[in-house]
Image (cartoon, rainbow, N blue to C red; front, side, top):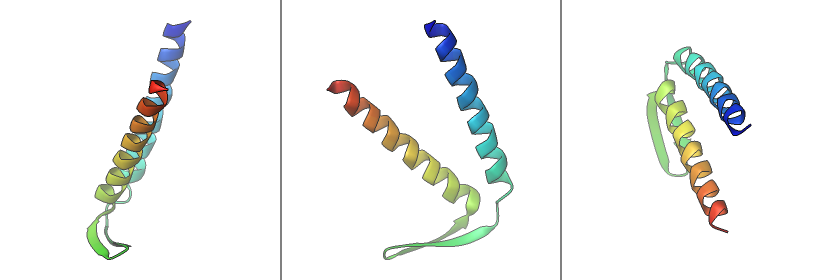
Length: 69
């Protein structure tokens, strides 16, 4: 049963990653992002990937902290 759940999670994760990659590749123009006092100009692909990685690491840290309880 655990193997089936692992395979399902892998398939869903792979599909989500593929969809995100397609979305990012279609939005490659340079944009300006303002956050508090910072202003960054970068390709949308860089902005989206940075946001994705930040969310991934926040989720990973949250899950790690939750497992310790």
